[in-house]
Each structure stands twice: as C-alpha cells, then as structure tokens.
Image (cartoon, rainbow, N blue to C red):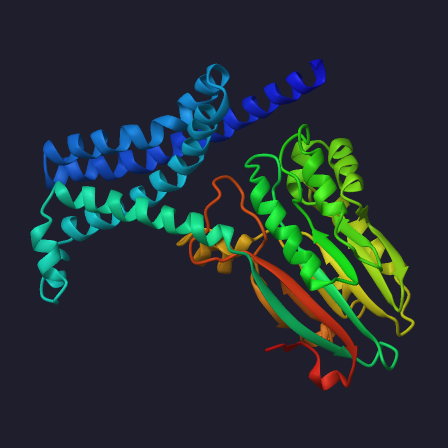
Length: 403
C-alpha cells in the first residue's frame, strides 16, 4: 500500500510540473498576442474577450493535481483528461491568435477580404474572431482525439541477398507508446489485438514504451506479453525511460516479455539485432565513444543486421554495419504545425529512407509512433504499427513499400 501511494504521489507531482510548465508557456504565448492585440488593434474588448475564453481552457492544467486528490472515480478521471486536453487547445488557440494579430497589425486582412472567404472574415470582426480561433482549436483537438485512437498498419517489404534463400521474417515495430501518463487501457487492448492479427515473428519496440512510474500498469504489461512472437521481442530504451527511472523501466519491459538491448547485439535466427542505448539527458563525446565501440564490435560477416535506436541519428561509425535501422522519438510532430518543425529537427524524421555515400545499401525507418506524449491527441500525424517483411531478394528491390 505504501509503495502504491508513493508511486501515485510521484505521478501527480511529475504531472503537476509538466502541466504547470505547459500552461505557463501557453500563457506566455497568448500574453504576447494579447499585448499586441490590445496595443495596436482593439484597446480593450479584444483582450478581455480573449482572457475570458482562455481562463476555463487552460486553468485545468494548474488546478487538476489539487482537484484529482479530492475527486475519485469517473469525475476525477474526467477532470484529469480535461487537463491534458487543455494544453493542446491552449497552444493551438495561441498560434491562431498570433496569426489573427499579424493579419490585422500588418493590414493583410484587406488582401484576405478580396477572396471569397473574405465574407467570413467580415462577419467575424474583432473580438469575435478570437472566438472563432478558439472554436477551431477545440474542433481540431476533438478530431485529434479520434486520429490518435486509430492506429494504422504500414507495411514494407525489405529484400536482401544477405538473407538465406526462402527467408520470410515478419518484423513488427511499435514505438513511443508512453504508457503511464495517459493510460487508455482500451487503446492498449485494441493495439494488442492488432498485433496478434499481424502474427509477428519478431516484435520490436524502439523506445519510450513507458512514461512515468510503472505502478498500476501490470495489466498492460501482461497484455503486451501475451502477443505471440516466435523469434522473441526486443527493445531499446528511449529518453522517457531515463526520466521514469531505469530500473523500474527495465523491470516493466521484462514484464512485457521484452529483452532490452543496451549497446548490445544478439543473433536471432538468420538475423543480427543491434540495440543502441539512448543517452537520456546525457550526450556528447562520451556517448559517441560508447556508440562507436558498439558498432566496432559488430562483425562484418554478411549477416543481415537489424538496428534498433530510439533517436533517428545515424553516426558515421555505423556505416556499412547495418542493413535496416528502426527508430522513433519524433512522433511525426504529433500535432500540426509541430509536424513541420519535426521535419527540420532531424535529417531523417519520418518514413523509410535509403542512405547514400558510405551508408550505401542501408535503410533507415523513422516511425511516426504508436501512442502519444502528453495529451492523447494527434493532428495530421496518425499513429502507426509498422510491418517489415524481410525476404531474400536482389538488393535493387530493398525498401519496396507493400501495397
């Protein structure tokens, strides 16, 4: 009892810090827009209206940890869920507010009014345009809730002459479930049903399976462990496992039936699997040296090498050492317009890429992620489970997408 209570308290404190930071960032973003609105556009009514609309949306983010301690059952769950949804609503509303402020301050509304949609603009003068912005944000998040719950299956056929003739191995990748902060047990049940239907020979997880302390997640671990995978289940840690606590995270992976590879490689049937550890908070020369030592230990003996790595960074030390690398971490941006930022954050940020130069003959796949971080919302970045059919085939056909 004492351990469970302590774990719950840790979850609440961690949630409070995360929500507080997100709420303060939202307020800061909106405050700048409201200052511009009040200073240059509408001296009073616009700012007042925006504040009245903003308060009930983002207030949950700060009040939830206190309310959750006093409310139990469905009401408490509803309040907690509302706090998660308040953050993306606030951020989207802030971005739209900035856009409206820019249009008005720069006089661009005159150009907008010249097109057919300008009629809508003329019907929504300040401050009612901010209400429209909030309405659009709420609808976008509502759509994102549904998008996050519908996990699509993406299939690829990867051929290699490094595989023995007649080989056909089905590798199923999950990534970035972030179990622990938002625990949708129905979602995990549907995911496990999908995984069973895919009949994986090999199940792999490319990090951030866990997010927060694993107390109370035993049933989720048992559900994942029940998925058959004749060649085994392997995982690498992500940055959020470091935040949750390494020992607890590794124990949870073992309860899920997964073997963690921390800068290790193992033979699995006709394959070799290399697991690159995530640095967590740490990076720099020390981490680069450790990764270089790992790749230096991988034999160059013509065996097909499958690499698992959370962050989609490919270092020169791995050139020629792997044929397919599976990554996660980016979530495809998760919520538009952050999907655009994700494209600039990493050289390989989404989908299957053929590498060139010293990496010629190697493929990198960056998953859009299976779950969500923070709010259970995805917008223009649908979640996925990825299936790779590894077959013996001429190298010219590697990375062919399956229809």
